[in-house]
Length: 317
Image 1 (cartoon, rainbow, N blue to C red):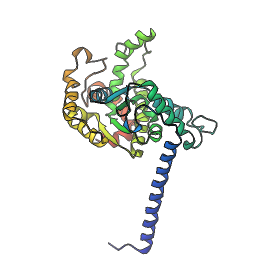
Image 2 (image 1 turned 180 degrees about the horizontal axis):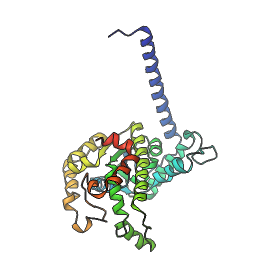
Image 3 (image 1 turned 45 degrees about the vertical axis):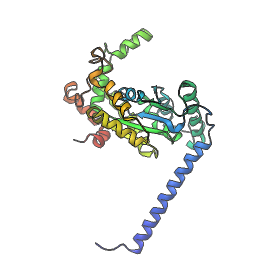
């Protein structure tokens, strides 16, 4: 193998300098966002906010319930703040991000306002959370906005919760059935149910939704420089205690071992009341790979085709 020429060394030096400049620019952008906003004088510290991003039906309810049992932990369930900003930015304004739009033009001009909104909303909506507490934000259905939220609050921490998209779609099909808990809740609140769709249409919609939400959450995870943990539902199901230990180690949050053991045992599948488990329930079957029984070969192929980038990365055959 030949030695490195002077030209090779010059190119390597330029690449190293360019990478250093990019890191410096990224740091300055983060500093600008932080200094350009009015910090809330009270409320939870930004670095004590822990986001759970991913997609619906990935196990975020289970994970957040375990985390809520720990001392100085509170959970904010489904604020949909990620959907608020993410849907506007990535869907509604995706083709016309002009300066006249609220989230238009250079992001540095409006990210401080997003940051101020997040901190103020957190304080106003969760005044029960003390400054030194940890606030776990369960936000799977707002994961489309994960890149914006993590850029606005770069000190905060993040859990990317991943699950096999075929199991996710099978679970969402069950949750959207006529007698599911979701339709029963809608009937109580609004006096009506969601109209039923042909399974193939529903599968396409659920798969595209998964791809967008999980794709944006993965983008946020890759870019985030602070505490973060990537968790597969399957490993959480196989070894909840070991996975929880790893999560807190990677988030750099101290946790009491006995509290952790107690939280995992309390919310284990075996300790969930039987009336809360089964088809149409919040907790359906908790069986990784159960999609093989729930989806036809054609339906599984449809999910695989639409979500192929994520399957290839996380669940290669």
